[in-house]
Image (cartoon, rainbow, N blue to C red; front, side, top):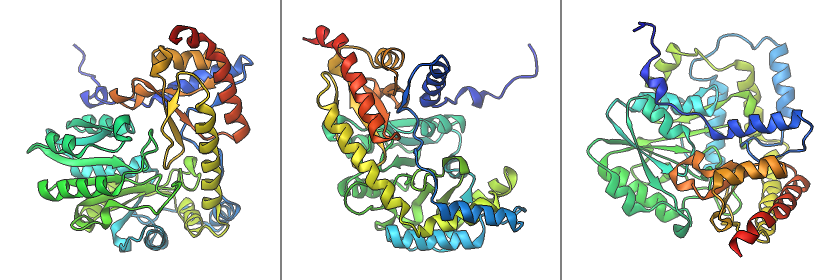
Amino acid sequence: MSHRRIATRVSQLNGEGALAVFSRAKELERQGRSIIHLELGEPDFHPAAPVVDSLRNAVASGRDRYCNTRGIPALREEIARYLARTRKLSIQPEQVLVAPGCKMALSLAMMALIEPGDEVLYPDPGFPIYPSFTRGLGAKAVSFGLVEKNKFQPDLNEIASKITGKTRVLIFNSPNNPTGTVFDDSALEGIAALANKHDLWVLTDEIYARILFSGEYRSISTLPGMPERTIIIDGFSKSFAMTGWRLGYAIAPVEIIDAMDLLVLNTFTCAAEFTQVAAIEALRDSTNAVDTMVNEYKLRRDLFVESLAKIPGFRCHSPEGAFYAWVNIEDTGIPAEELQKLLLEEAGVAAIAGAAFGAEGKNYLRFSLVSARHLIQGALDRIHRLSVKWRAVTA
């Protein structure tokens, strides 16, 4: 037996299903096929002009050096102001840590909180990295379901029944990827009560907080007893269409930020200064880019949900936030994996089979509403034409 083995933690990880579909779709495009991409959670928008100008100026003026491990002070102050303005949070700049991407902020927080043998509660369906990284840290990932008959809201009794003496952290994401559910007040209050009662950390992934189609966003950290046990993960990729810029942040009690900072020193040193400078401009949003983008997502959502109702065998609960449609395809009589393949290979529509987001997703497909409206309409027309294949079966 060779001594040059790979650490077992790597075998505990899994990837993201979206990327496999994306590479097959690209392959078909190279063969000359027309593909409508609704698989990746990547906005088709780009950052506003002032943000790009700010980056260019920052690089040109030499802001390309090592900088503060927690993020440049000006950005941390701006994040605190931004969250006060858009989310009614009162936080200090020392509670902010900037990282190269949200996943990095999330994994630093998880490394700071989770020990081997701990149990971590996470939503199913949900972002596949939550259980993956939990297992990578030697902990046990325990799912709670977001099911259609409950309008994809969490079942508080189920969560309560899954808390044990080993439960340390509860992770959730509202608006949720993939369902588009915004956790309602009773869900947030119920989770907060359980966290307080059982002394749990709560990791709230608020990356889609700005992409909300009605009402005001409510963060669980505004509830009683929660600021001292909540870590907020957020960033620039979705709300500001800055996916490739790799910039995210965590908001947490200072002792957690200190622990994460030590992890930063042991891993990546700092996020690039010039992207942080430009991020300040993004947060100020002088051109109202965020509202413009959210209005467009809302139009896409309405178009998608309305047209989808005409496709036999498909049904979809209208998402309250984010830019995904979580479509139940049970009535087609075709397994989701097969349907995903059929849509891609025969109709040229790229979507993701729901099992990529957990066991609860087995009868669903996720469509990302990240293509222009005429393309979304085109995709729905293609699906409608293909539906003759299963109409006969289910008739």
